[in-house]
Structures are given as C-alpha cells and as structure tokens.
Amino acid sequence: MNHQEKTPEENLTELMAFVLLGFADMPHLHWFLFGLFLIIYIIILMSNGTIFLITKMDPALQSPMYFFLANFSFLEICYVSATLPRMLMNLGTQRRIMSLVACATQMCFVLMFGGTECLLLAVMAYDHYVAICNPLNYPLVMNHRVCIQLVTGSWTIGIPVMIGRTYQIFSLPFCGSNQINHFFCDIPPILKLACGDTFVNEMLVYIVSVLFIKVPFLLILGSYSKIISIILKLPSATGQAKAFSTCSSHLMVVVLFFGSAIITYLRPNTRDSEGTDKMLSLFYSILTPMFNPMIYSLRNKDVIIALRKLLCK
Image (cartoon, rainbow, N blue to C red):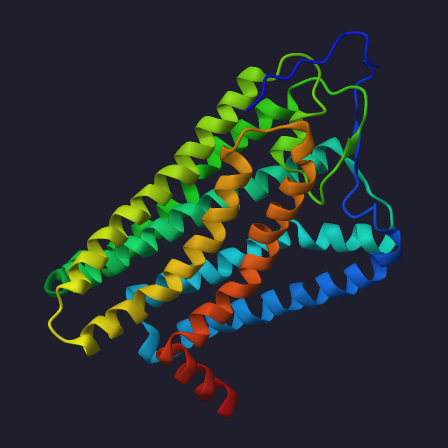
C-alpha cells in the first residue's frame, strides 16, 4: 500500500458525515440499479434462507458438512444485509449522506462478517479434508462438539480484532472532501479521506488482511492439495468423480470469494484504483452470496432432493 500524507493547508474542518457516491456517476440508471439490486437482495434472502431451512429440517442433511453449510448461508444473509439495504435506500431516495457513526458501524459489521466468512470457508475445507483423507475416523474427529467449537470460533475470533481495527480508523482526523467513491464504508476509500500520516493504519490493514484472508486461503490450498493427492490414488474412476463432486462446490465458492477479496485488500493501493475496488467489492460482497446457493444446490444431489421434498409439501 502506498504511503499517503495530506498537507496541513487542506481544509481541516472535522467531518461528521460522509457522502456515499455509489453510482452517482450514472444518474440515468439509478431506478434500473435500484430494481436490479432489490431483485438480487430478494434472491439472496430466499435462496440462502431456503438452504438454511432445509439443512435444519431434512433428516438426511444432518451431517457436519450441512451444519457448516447452514451457518454459511445464514452468514451470507447477514453479510449482504450490512450493505445492500443502505445502498437500496441511497438509490431510492438519492440521499447519500451517512453519519460518521453509521459509517463506522457499517464498516465494523462488514469486516466482522467478511472475516467470519474467510474462517468458515477454511473450516469447511478442513471438514472435506477429514472426510476424504481420514474417513474411518471422520465421525470421531468431526463430532457435534467439535463442529460447534469450530463454528463458534469462526464467528467470534474476528470480533475484537475488527472492532479495534474500525476504532483505529475512525480515530483518525478526517478533513477536506467527505465524498466516498464507494457504495459502502470500506477501508481503502475511508483511509483516503484521513488527514496526516496513514502509513501505520495501512500496514495494520495489510496485516489483518493477511491473517484473515491470506492465512485461511493458504490453509484451504493445503487441505485441497492433500485431498486431490488422495483422490487421484483412488482405484475407481467412479470414486474419484464422487470425491471431486463433493469438493467442487466449496472450491468454486472459495475461488469466487477469495479471488476478489485478495485483489482488493492485498494489492498495492493507488489513487486510480477506486473504480476497480468498487467493482471487486460489488462482486465479493453481493454477487458471490447470490451465486453460492446456486452452486451448492445445483452440484449437490442431497440438497436437490431436499428441495424437491420441501416444494412438494
């Protein structure tokens, strides 16, 4: 990340509110975008809600894998609800002003849910690893108590870190422009509005990103390297195909989410990157939660059967 320093000659009036520009550069499309994102939000709520419901109700979906999937679906609903309702309100009313407290609150929840998603995806990779590489001990290793502990850890480990990170960022003095070229309060555009030296804060952002994005991603890669090596040693092509099918849905979700998140938070930050950051954030925070239920339901026979049972009732 680049070292940024704003000069004292800038307007040093302390900001109490921000303006989320969002899609202000496309005023002729704001009603179209409002309708599009409203449909996307409804799809996310209904699809993730349905998966959460069937994994709780169907007796055939009571394994650890579906326990993690239920938590993941609930997390996706929380994640998009931290950004989409506000974006819809801004598009519908064209009032883009957001108080400093509201902005900090939104950032904190986005960071907490994003960090939880990274950890939960790593936990799901570990579940696949145990199921394929150590199948005889799977019921013992992934018992209900362990599953509860893994999920609880995923949800709670990041909370104090993300609250502290948000507090540090919003303890900085803000001056000059109050316009955020984004559709929600994300770290990179907020830091660009801070006065003085933001180098330490940018380094802390990078360290937290490494811990909550890069480390889980590397753990997932390690798990799948072991999984693939075991699958390739299976004697039958049918067994290989079944094992690959079990992992493929999760692997697709990992690539979609981590790919865009790593590019956003771990690449060098420049002044010309605002448009790219906005598009990447749109992808991992809104589009990916919409695709995830489709990926899991279309590539999982048990989920499809449970869906049919639910629809036939």
